[in-house]
Image (cartoon, rainbow, N blue to C red; front, top):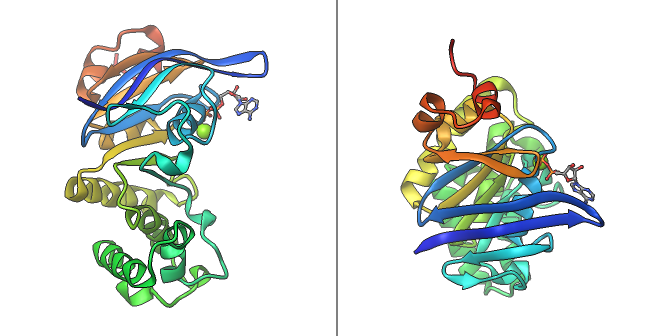
Length: 238
Ligand code: ADP
Ligand code: MG
């Protein structure tokens, strides 16, 4: 059974259609990268999966359950935002436990989950610090920690590395992949960066103007682009 299935998903903002019928089936444990130029609809699609945006048409299911009308907090997903979305007045531990607290999780349980996530992310020495005393990479790990403590079925990332400098970006790509290999949580990762897509994805979904141009492994897309758009965007050598 597909972990996430999108069937003919559509989205309009007012009268303006921006997603024109997207079909994608994502398997359990897969790392899917949605890639395409700015404005093609990646964030809109991700936000519909997250339940942060209404769906105008089609069917979305997560774990076999149709979720079109299910509120975000009942979807068993966690979204990782860019590192600047941390709360500056809270410590690392408080940042990581914040959403659990909102969900009414008991204090002991929050402490246990934060400890365990901090261990996975090598953040144990920093739990009492505030975000301003952390490096960019550490902040990004805290942003991931906030998602991990929720123990979600699905991780959603929207351009999580775009605030980081080039060198750190490369290191964080590897960290996110390693984390995925360890936890095997189904992941949908949005980026406009072809290299990021090629190096991180199990399968890539190439989007353009609100449609899916091609779905395939990095090698398939590189070797056999199915449209001229994909060929140009991914950059096939002459
Ligand atoms: P991407 O993430 O690929 O850059 P988006 O999903 O943000 O693309 O945007 C897709 C299209 O929808 C763009 O044309 C954008 O201007 C439009 N759009 C996004 N959000 C809104 C909104 N809240 N209201 C109206 N139009 C929007
Ligand atoms: Mg976007």
